[in-house]
Amino acid sequence: MTQVYLSGGAMTAFGRHTGVLAPELAQQAILKAMTEAGVTPKDIQAIYCANVLGGMILGQVIVRDLGFAGIPVYNVENACASGATSVHLARHAMLAGQYETVLVFGIEQLTALGGGTIPLQRNDHKTELYAKAGMVLPAVYAMRGTRFLHERGAQPADLAAVAVKNRRHGALNEYAQQRSEVTLEEVLGSRMIADPLTLLQCCPSQVDGAAALVLSSRKPSGKPAVRVLASTVVSGLQEGARDDILDAEITARAARQAYEQAGLTPSDVDVVELHDAFTIAELLYYEALGLAPHGEAVSLLHSGATALGGRVPVNPSGGLLAKGHPLGATGVAQMVEILWQLQGRAGARQAQGARIGLTQCTGGGIAGVDHAASSVHILGV
Image 1 (tube, helix red, strand yellow):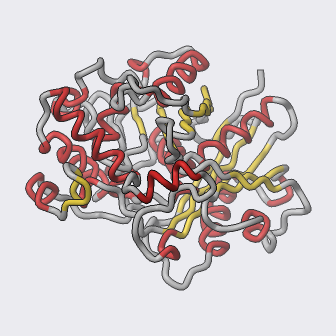
Image 2: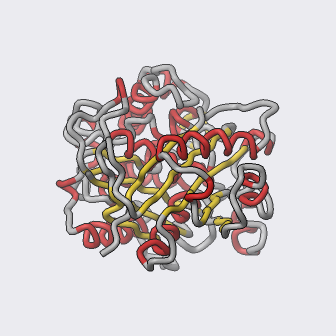
């Protein structure tokens, strides 16, 4: 069977890139990834561009001046899961024997939106009605947080502890937007966004960034070879009145498929990058990914297992809470981080001895489903 390797990866710093247009920002990551992979434009057979809000044919605009000779460019939009979906589609084409070397990149410039929450669907009357009534994503996750505190006997400080951990990790990451540690008191005392979620428990929405990967069916030489062991993308199911908002069903389903595909179990995973858009999300995903039994997410967090130096560090990059969340770039950037972790190149934030890494990304706030999409990838050396 064809193997798919990550032969090179790069990202820009995530933050406010004033005066830099999307093509230039993406090209910085693309050129670095190709240099690391030791390839030229002639070697690339297809390109996958992940973006949510940048407009039509952005991929072609970005690569127009880089010397690619008329190869196919696929523009992929799948909300926050766009980058992960792009890798999934590229791997499918490679396993089918269509390509041997492809370039995948993600790019987003959220500072161009002028602030506020990320816009929800405007082509669905039900979602628009929900949004007008205040059911934007911070409110949705606040409801989950409130229910979590009630059902699990948890305290607001348990949610805030996720932000403390991830900001500590992010302080070690030169690519993160937020590079300062915070205390529990600072997190709890920051401005309330949607009770119980304070400002420092929500990922920054004013951030630009790009990330790129070169995927190849040829095993790279001179460095640990990182393979894509599993890749899944699933859509949300229509919710019923009795559905549990703490279930994270879509992510649990994607994870089960990924573990089966890779022939692994949650206990085999050494390091994780997951979609911590809000603090409560990380706790829910501990359980959905099988890192903690049902009801044990808070205990796992406070045990130190998910911090650097623990059994399974989660979001050593700082996650979305510290690194930021430029939508189209996030899923690709998660895999770049895991690539570096598995190759022992993550510096002060290195998860020691990591050989199996997992990334998880959800996306899409629409009425009536958990999320529109969820993607889980498992990488290994």
